[in-house]
Length: 325
Image (cartoon, rainbow, N blue to C red; front, side, top):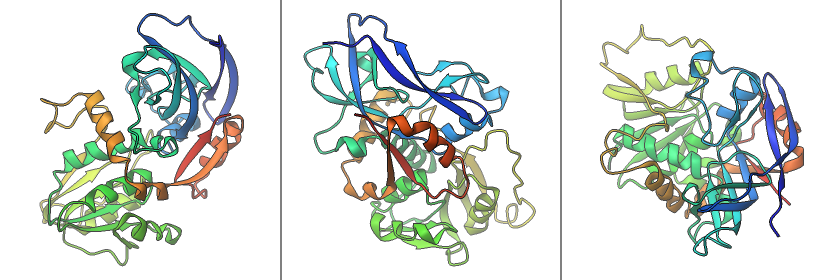
């Protein structure tokens, strides 16, 4: 029997959150009802929203696909939801699907908003789909190729996914750089070399920065070879960032370029749309190497405490998965 209410997680910036009960709109033609099994917290975006660190100029651009509420006020945010279709078209009924939906026990959306998980992707890993979509778009933006010497600075979820994808490029020499030796296990797990900044190789063909720190960005610039590209994945919110452009940046003729998942990479935009890209991201998650990036799980009812923990810079969690009853 279809339920008419759900429990949803709301952020109350700065630094507060709550789980609230809400009514579900009647299910319409061409819609599905999904019972959530797992979600994941975006360590970068959601903690910035939670902390109230989103600049006013970015309120509209920072909207999650199914966000409710408006910044700087209370918002229902998030975009990594895996669940089972309990009502809807026969082709989707009973299927496990991914949707860019916030943390909520049950929800109703248009059928085209969900994508069935491939049989090769377990639901527990499927929560990485939105992050994998970001990583895939980054590789398109970076034009990474076979044989390249590639360094990824920042061994978080995005950095780890990018490193894992780069490791599959024929002949590529891939280094994953981080100051936290606790993450050294990601090197062998993803099939790349883990390095501290002091150990990292210089003169790289491509450097991708994903640490969300100015020190990490400056490390990335220092490792880039002559006329190489440094691709910036980090989003800093309202924080001012000091970038060291007085060193080799000009003499090395470096290119500093941003990548953001909201727009398809120009190299693929004529032929791809967002749904095709997300479906491909799910296909790429058939690789069990990426389980190494999910290192914490908690119950949905504990989400307020989880968010308070994740915003602490000392917390070492990579991907925080949320489990639903």
